[in-house]
Image (cartoon, rainbow, N blue to C red; front, top):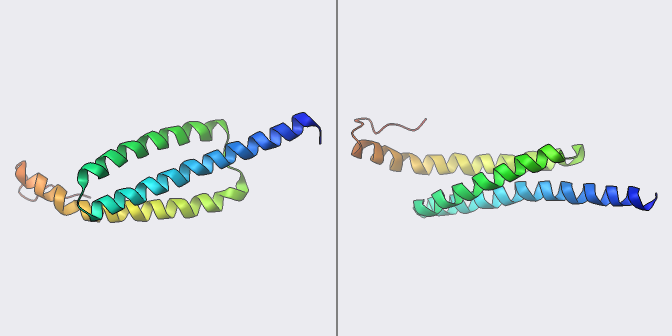
Length: 114
């Protein structure tokens, strides 16, 4: 393999690792959000949600430039499943809080979260 080909392989490896690092960063932020939600620290949940939105936008851009290699898709799937589990638990923890806000704002049923 000549030098330009080797550089291309190294660049591809760096980009794919970078893409996985976005998924891992989002997973880490979602775990932090879950920890904050369990503690009732909704200000931190909202702040971390904003950080996740930025990471997701960066991930979308990076994925459009260099898609994840096929051999790493299974790892991405496992990471995404953990993120979705975190999100589901956060929603369950947030529902009573959201219903209370709904009642304060005049919704008799609390404006149930779906």
